[in-house]
Image (cartoon, rainbow over all chains, first blue to last red):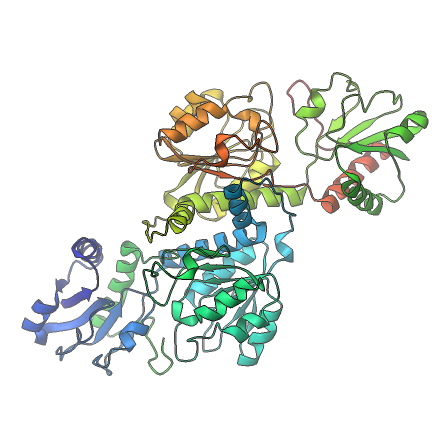
Length: 314
Length: 314
């Protein structure tokens, strides 16, 4: 069982992945791109993490491309990606849990004014804010996939009023979370939300969705949390909404260009809390378990999990 | 039914409390200190919030002193406090929930490195930290009263490994939270904890408990969260433990003197996150409900709730 492993990781990261994958799937041999081309007729699967364009060409027996990352918009943008080979996204329980933690931390920080407390500490000012119960805070989660559902569930458990927006098939059902499913439902949902969390996939339909009109629909004093992709946001529109004070705060984990360039206004904006794309990282151990399950399903002719619908874009 | 209402609140705060108390207990008349002295023979209960020393003298028919605050060490320090009148602490479900939120926010921030991210943002540095699962983080909650138990329960629900330490009678039982009950158990518990949360009452036994020996017992790189009282901490010892890097971080909501004086090193210390005593505020509406329940129990001769054991100190 020969599997191509390639991606944009450095030597140490590659070794960490190799260790985890070998432990989870000891029956496999893991080949780099050069080895895979030599033994091209034997390579049945590829496990990839943002591989260079063209990395999956020349493998005639390939029957599965398994991404190590949850987002596959980079893979789909490669015009040489074999179109007939099933492509699977990573769904990693540890990553879902980490994303839910980050969403909860952002909501607690916004709800309880802890970002304001941090600014007051830096200014040397003792300033107490009023306290309101979680049940008075309305949170919208855009995208109820695995990660959005995990975030919505935790927020509901903490007593927040949570609604979800999910356009396409098979949103996760989350107890206590109202589900909105039409394009027309987005504006009324935004208009009543104190905090909006973006966990949508990046597709042609969602790119630049968070624009001036989107922010203007949110109520004055509300906050945005972007944990999905930088390209969901029109940066200039977000900055304008923050500058005017219409939006109270933005928590941003993802950016058009990463690392975020040093001159970008997000770095220094008093209403921006910036994370360096750490909201949820794939955990090599639990991700390797997911890879092994899909590779074994392939070998046994069983259904593959988490396949990407290429027309939909995720 | 005449009740004395007095405390250190300003006119607006007094009115807010009056509104909530009148709604919860419409059969009562609420008197200030001057009125209460005029009608002294009719005052059966006092509802107090850090009243000036001597405020409860001269009321021969007093049968209940109900604090609006959870902490009563200020009341007990008043040598003129009538010793024979039952004294009740406030137990406010909204306050318990707020305390659990603050504890959870502090633990999420420490576990996931979000305080470090904030410092990196201010320094203009893109620096990703490793991610570890909540199940690898050991949290100790000191004091499993109403607020400690609420915090421990939420932390356990989020997947943290949680242990509690509680010396005196009737700690709350929290599913999944190991309970340690002896003085000797404290050091081994501290020694294995990544994060220690102080929610003890302030008594002769707990004053200055968080001293050099306490911090030295905690492991290198661990963090302290003080949500109880400033006098639990020996400030100079905490600063030394932070300066040396033995403690990674401190989250402090309470201080020896509040507001914290402008020159105090906590304000500017890079390892200190400072909150202005907002971890949990008493909610007038739910607190008034608790007051009404105890006053009605008094009138009906039923048992009073949350009575202070004066010898124990809380």
